[in-house]
Length: 172
Image: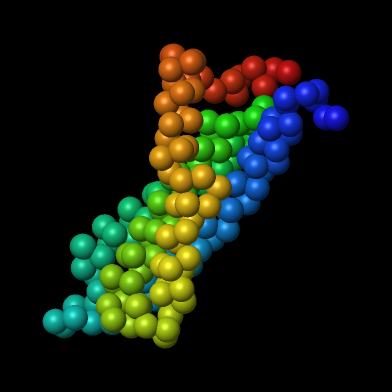
C-alpha cells in the first residue's frame, strides 16, 4: 500500500501532472509549427498586389500567437518548477493545460485561415493539427474541470493564490 488507505488518488495525481505537462509541451510544438506554416505561406502569397505577410491583419494574428505561445511556455515551466520542488502543482498544471490546449486550437485555426482552402486540404499538416487540436481540450480533463479546480484553489487560498515562492526557493 502506498501512502495509506484512501490516498491512492494522490499517487495517481502525482503522475498526472507530469503527463499533462508533456502533452502541453507537444501542443506548444504543434502551435509553433502552425505559426511556421502560416508564416511560410504568408511570405510567398500575394493578394491584391500585396504579400499577405505585409498585411496588418496577418501580422496581428501571428504576433498574437507568438505572445500566447510564450505565455504557454512560461506556464509549463512554472508548473514544472513547482513539481521539481516537490509540490503537486495542481493549479499550475491546470492553468498550463487550459491555456495551451486552447492555444493549439487557435494556432491551427489561424494557420488554416491564412492558408485559405490550401490550409484545410491535406497539402499542409495544419488540417491534421486542427483535428488533433480539438481533442486537446478534452484529454486530461475538460477545460471546465480545470477551471473549477482553479476556482476551488482561489476560494481556498484567497490572495495567496497569486503567491509564487521564487525568493524562498532561491534562499533554500
